[in-house]
Image (cartoon, rainbow, N blue to C red; front, side):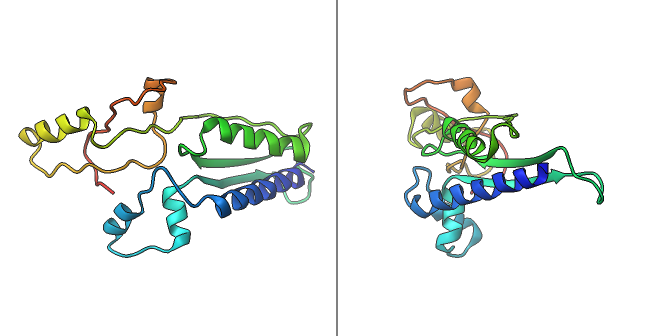
Length: 175
């Protein structure tokens, strides 16, 4: 039964995630202070974990087409937010490890979109120039804030190990 195998996979992924989060206390991208300011309230430890660290959520589960049949195919789809501590390679390796353990003869992984985290110093020259020049063109306060998670900007930066000046500039509400 395809559903049983996928349920086993989802349960094992859930346990792996739970184990990771129990030991994941320090985050390179810690945005809790900004989020608390935006929400205008203090957040608890569990919420802080979600906002600042690695997130892996099984958001779609599909199996079977009718009640009185044994499904030959089932799928589970995940939304994963990588962070510097747990990058795309880590996530792919985790999925493959659990697939090997649960049933590699029956399970496959398909990653339709994979972006690594992009980090940049908030005081880099690019951001300094933006905050100096932008007020001449934009009649709103310029806010420098962290962007949590990943962005397709990693596609442009490639595997550059150097600290690249990086900014996402545009409309929207800051965190």
